[in-house]
Image 1 (tube, rainbow, N blue to C red):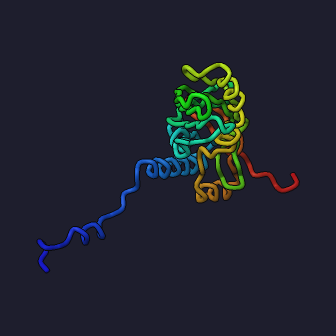
Image 2 (cartoon, helix red, strand yellow):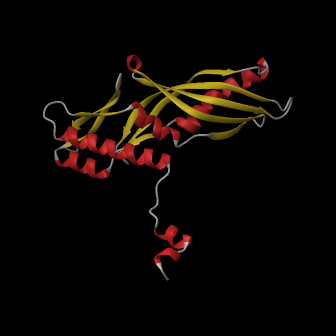
Image 3 (cartoon, rainbow, N blue to C red):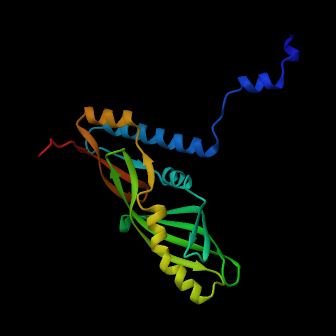
Amino acid sequence: MSASTVSTEAVRATAPHWPNRRDWLRRAGSLAGAVALLSACATPGPREFTLSERQILAALSERFPANRRVLEIFDVRLASPKLRLLPTEDRLMLGFDLGVQERMLTSRSFKGSLMFSSGLRFDAGDSTVRLARVRRENLAIDGLPSLLASNLNRWGGLLAEELLEGAVVHKVEQSAIDQAARMGLRPGALKVTEGGVTVTLEPIRAQGA
């Protein structure tokens, strides 16, 4: 068979697989965090690395849109996560577009927004940075009757626990963790700053110390 008669199927079989945008962002974020940690290990003086706002938002975006049924009355959809750093409070502000379908009385659909704030913690068990102490900050739904709105408002805190508490916003590559350990260091304290989330590398204490 000549080169000119090569089938489309054969071309497809040999073509490289390109990851989609979400996979690319996740892998790029993990690589950037590993490089930052390794660079921090090689730097004299205070050692730390910073997770950017973009890295954190990319990780959160993998979890949304999310759909939940609430109190058997509402079908709720959270989408389009947004992120704002709150350095003075050492927390993050998370905002979502909210869609609500009321199922029992009017069968109407409503749109609004839902906002949470959250702290952060490092989980040494799997080398991840996770959301912690999530709390609902604001719920706004255009045109929803006040009685229904009050029921939905009470439910907001439960949604925070279900969808966001403990959510992973970054995973540090194991090779970077191993490199830090060889230097007697490990990720420790987290701090929200104007430029992102700073992770400080702390000395590994001897067991029982």
